[in-house]
Image (tube, rainbow over all chains, first blue to last red):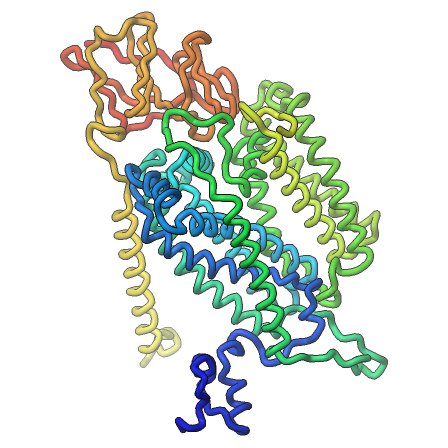
Length: 453
Length: 163
């Protein structure tokens, strides 16, 4: 057997069988890459303009984060006294310390973006249909885990940014009725952010979440294959029920792997250059008595924080919660499988999507301005408790507005359920992005609206 | 064997049920132990413990003194009563600052403000600043920072006087 095995050590890493004529087929079956991918994939599924490679890029970022994260663990000290100085030391004294931290920081931020865009891609190509509801849910859980990773990692440098973003973020939990304070106390190991919270966040960030992530990611990949690969349009059938044209299928090696390597190379090059040019931020040491003004959460929470300025905190959590649930249950709401694999479902879907974008572009800033300068619901309804006037009422108005948009698309645009949901989803996502932009760029001291700096 | 129709639990079902119940119990035990393991840690003398603020006489009536390490402001009213308010804003947990010239606590995060006894002057804060129990023994003021008391508004009964 040994004389038939490839002499090349690299081949031995991925092939487990002898390399002769008969063994070549088995080699394909035993290839490590082919445990991840099927042996053949439909040619249209390989187009950049279909997937944009977002799932693969997210997975690559996860790998980069694990590698750089393990390196950081060797140099980081999760104690209130030493956390900040250990980061300072890393930034100034440790070989490649600043670079490794910067790579970790920017990969983490980029992963929020690519995972979110991946969700958008899957939604717009109806990738949650044809029995893919379980993987759709796993994907949403993975996205939430990415956010949880970012949130717990945010505290670790123990600078002003970290301390106050986590203080504001965890205070939100306090508004959950009954259980809120208990959860917040457990997470923070006390009433406010301190040594216990730093330790807890560190353990969650470097042990609990990575273990869960690896399990969930593996499951996500495995399920893609079990669901029959990524979503593709249904074949067009002639009168006899035969496909009009055969979809070409290409072998994974080299056609898919080649593209993946290209995307990975471009991403790594981009990240390396970016990390060298823009170091990860580090503000002054955390000072529990002096919050910065304005105190802002991490950028991906700015949409929520903006919502919070306009509604009672309970309402500002229930509204995104309901939207999140609606997104989770989307596969049960939109069961029309005829439009799978087609961007925006149809021409009507394209129109509803554009309508959603335009409506959100007009309505969101308008409502923010109205609430900021003219409408003060608690003042208009003085007899009402604030939880009704500034909580339940805006919540019901928002939900009513979303329903109105949905039915307007159904009735006026004559959209079917699938197409109307494209419009509604687009409206919600665009609105959320606009709120995030307002929160990041247009909120100054005392969280007042300001122009761009 | 007489009431065969009633005895639907077979030996296999019983064992399955037993293993399931025992597993559930084990999960509860491990979960409970983990929660207790992670329960909030507090230290005596620091924030979270009972703090000695000083003698009664060292605080002039109508004054507000900040204890940054213990996270509270000790307020002495004009009548001489003591009130310890938690510096944490009731909106989203930022630290409020005492502004002497305006006579108010101000939160820079979302611009809430509170008057001298912690009542909300300006929302979004939903309720008055939380307080800690104050006890006065032998002319010494003690503040229990381990017990956070929430309240909607200020009431005269919240003031602590020397016995």
